Length: 59
Image 1 (cartoon, rainbow, N blue to C red):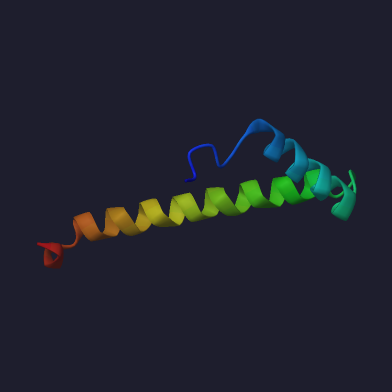
Image 2: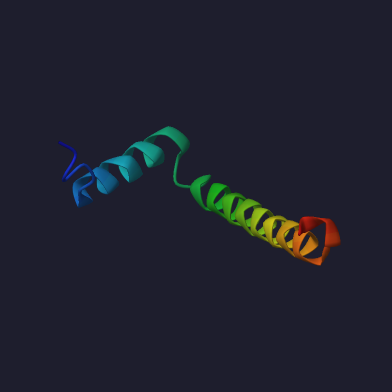
């Protein structure tokens, strides 16, 4: 049913809508903020995983 649900023209359409909604000046700032957020999330998840492995109660 959803064999070809996501095709390349879908991505082009999504990018065009984003540019129309937010403008080309705000998109780099939004992408930069998203990248920072993902880096923070990744580091926090890694720290949580390391804390669980170091804890003797995890066993």
